[in-house]
Image (cartoon, rainbow, N blue to C red; front, top):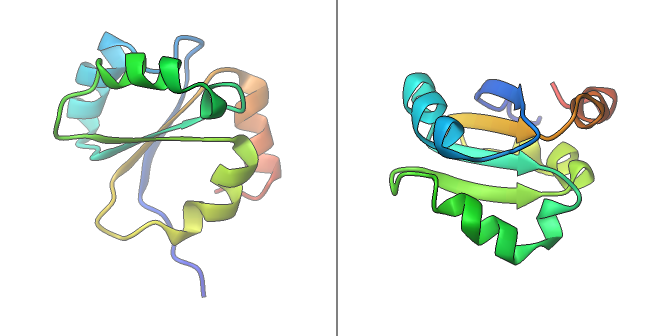
Length: 101
């Protein structure tokens, strides 16, 4: 049986990870893993590196396509406190319709 992932919050933000997300939201939630679910960013290593600069060292980041997020989110370890960021409401809807809950 699949695990129920420990998702603390899913946020829609067209900037994805930036200072407010990287520090304020991450710290307020107590997240230790930030997942960016976006098809474009999942394949853009330069943008990923820039976004990683906004995160404290205590947080890990992952950049997945929407499809990959749906397929693997239930494999998350119970110790992972997950904060998911998507770019658009359509991205969030795709996760929900893909049975990401």
